[in-house]
Image (cartoon, rainbow, N blue to C red; front, side, top):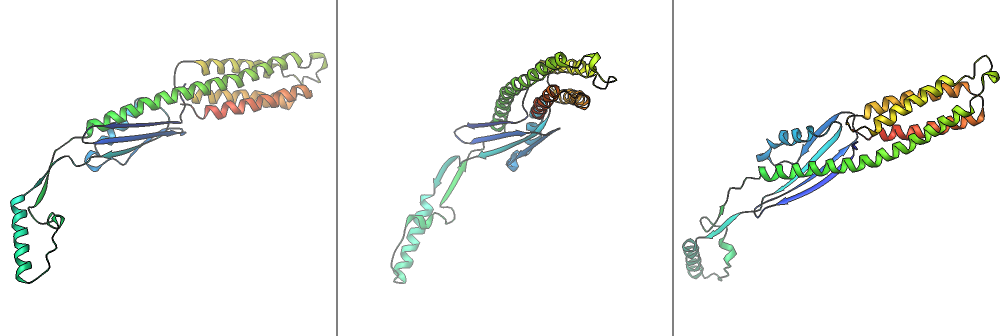
Length: 259
């Protein structure tokens, strides 16, 4: 069992560049994937990241935020010959026109041919995809851990329903006390017990994609509880039915958060 809500955060770096990926998954009845902030030069990776996610997730609204940094890489070159000519010309003009000479080296760096950057071509595609795969892997682990918690909570609530069903079976009116079979809830209790066992098997089953099946079985259990509630007049049974509905509602809420 896997939770639909999950989160992962991965950072990968090299000497020239770094990528940070934040992934988040929320409840949604279908699978919807969006990738944000990819640099324009790597926009073709959007479909690749989506396909990686779609192979391991079935439901949920998944968002991947990519923060890519590519610092300047290479060597800085200063053309000293050109710089010397600029300085010489500036001093000549200052002397000729009787100007105060206030020169700083930074004044010349923006002039043509004085400074340039020898950049290295680095490809960030492999780094981004490596970070994306790691983020997906960590998200799946998160989903499984949360799924175990949800499963345990669902089984606890189901156990309480099954205990109440056993009490209802024991406390149900005897045939002699029934008024024209109007209080006969034997069938409802029998079906309640049957669906509860099926629900337990579904919750503990190893296969995935069981959120819809669990939701269906909870609806069937609720139908039998409502039918029993409309028939019984015994306060003790009514209390157990109301309690069971409360436990069932918790299971239904938990089922909304699983794939």
